[in-house]
Image 1 (cartoon, rainbow, N blue to C red):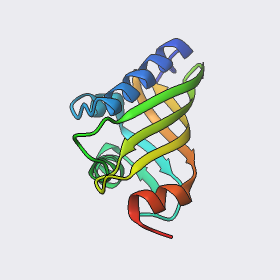
Image 2 (image 1 turned 180 degrees about the vertical axis):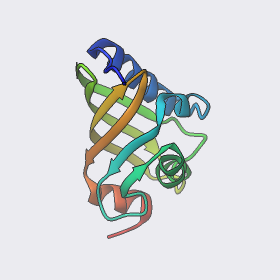
Image 3 (image 1 turned 90 degrees about the vertical axis):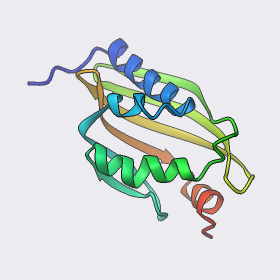
Image 4 (image 1 turned 120 degrees about the vertical axis):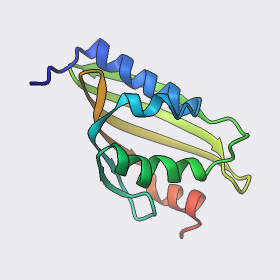
Length: 140
């Protein structure tokens, strides 16, 4: 049976995950996500959905998102608040980047993580889906 991480351990995993995103560390990210993890991305855009398993998360969310940004420009994840209790971690952050089209991108995100056995088991994000779809996918 899985044992939930303590708040400090879970928080450390989420911080490592956010650092890997910031640094675009493709090798570190899969090590931090459980093989059967579930990600929920809200909205009506190409990466919206509930993605189950590392392969689906990578194929339907992580890789398509990476393609939306200029790989030569900075990608920042500025963490404003983190609250951790047991296996649950809540993060408020601002993501700043440049799109492939050269447009500035700045999005406030609230993300809820569940961490077990040193890996992310689930992530649910909340953000301005209209801004996201318009800025990254030209929708609306």
